[in-house]
Amino acid sequence: MSLTSPVPDPISGIVLTALGQKCFFCGQRCSDPAIFWCGETADIYLHPRCVTDFTIRLHRDVHEHDRPDYYRRLRNSDDPMRG
Ligand SMILES: [Zn+2]
Image (cartoon, rainbow, N blue to C red; front, side, top):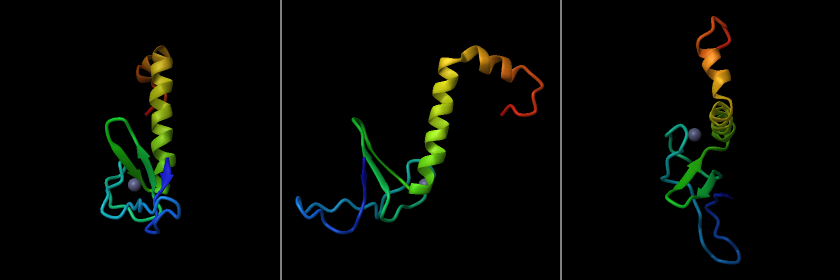
């Protein structure tokens, strides 16, 4: 994970900018600074403000994976908090 910047890295001289990239989460164009992850199959850019919402949803999916019975009951209940 890195923060993007239009300023070259002082050691490598490499510029890692988010200009021209779309946010993996919301799809809107990024500007610097943005969050950059270099994955095994793709690189992703995220607005800093999108990271929290994205990670909450990831954790929610992991929670559902770990507790499928809880979510099955939740979907079948009349609980107004379900969603
Ligand atoms: Zn975004």
